Image 1 (spheres, rainbow over the protein chains, first blue to last red):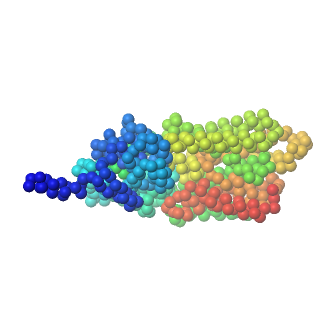
Image 2 (image 1 turned 90 degrees about the vertical axis):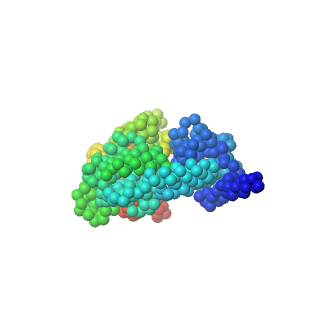
Length: 272
Length: 302
């Protein structure tokens, strides 16, 4: 009897265990017999998430832009070296859109399975990405906890604080507009994006000057470099520059859609 | 005269209408005034440079960047950004200017060595240019990050970073404009070929003068705005169609046409997809290439 009960429990638990099927960004179904333990991550955001899940030991290769030490660098995000990837013999390669399809094809042609993840467009989708990775690596509990914590950390504030610009201050002014995860980030913090079109774009200087942002958020590495542009058109004379509400946030933090972005959120919340 | 009026009217429209609409807002107006002036001077410099080089090589396909000035300017800025970690924008411009001038020095050296063969000079310029382009691609492949907006700026050419300081710098070109206005006789002679120099002009000196002035013009513009293509190629062609072959008229005419072409291109670049701004280099190529084809198909010169 006891044995029978254990067997029923095993049967009930079975859906949570392996083998599992997971859908990728293109809707293709990937079959996992067991959690993969040799993985290459081409996207720094995915790498950061895997580290958060405590799974960095399964990484055999990461992109050049990742800060992870002691792991083989396999090249840039758009130009990874297919030979090195093949040579590392991973069970799966994780990439994030917008990695070119041709690149995914050429890695797959070498006989390596590629799992493209959807590029998160807001904080919920970042949480979903964490849960999906947790599922693949059999870290469901931990992933759910991270996702939950993350969504609590970036929970929206109700106070409206004004208009903000988020993007580069050197020409051509690359701007994160509606429908990007950065747009969601600032709107949760109570700021309205001055750019009303979709996606990333090179906004014209006049448009920026007319919209007159109250806050400027810059992804950058060196504060000195970014500040010099603020003396010039279109930044000079904007309300943000006059009141000193300019944030330079490390680009490795700000431009990666991973749960770590909650750190950037905290910095943005500090601005009243 | 008609050209001058057309240029003036375009400038007025340029200053009054922009992505922010019709406005008399002080800051924006002064920005447009500076940017418009800048576009005109850069346009005439590129056009003049193209005209002189076309005469020097007696070849209609020559453009200001053919001798590798743009690639060496890009190399300069890449070295400054990636290897020396320089972040100040004027210093990066300075570096790219220094490198393109270095290119001119190399060219003058080869001019002396292979004189009087102009073809050798052309080949040296083209091969040095392609080598540097390859080196640039390698540097960018290794070092660049996404989205690397500062590189886009260099590769596509844009006037959006223009301020009063840049305007002052480009005013340094004005003496070169004046000098070149007096060089129409030499340019005419260049078209006649080597025999013309039997009449007593110092051939070597003319070659060197034309080479230095034209490449210095292009180098200055490139180091401030990035690579803006086709203006230097088509403007002299348009000039030739309207004013014929004599450089006495052709030099000022080409300069005005170059100014007009870049001003209008920048107007389109700013307004076409507003509030998104397109790099002006894309517009000049987009309009310039078909226009050039049209001119070639209707050709009765060269």
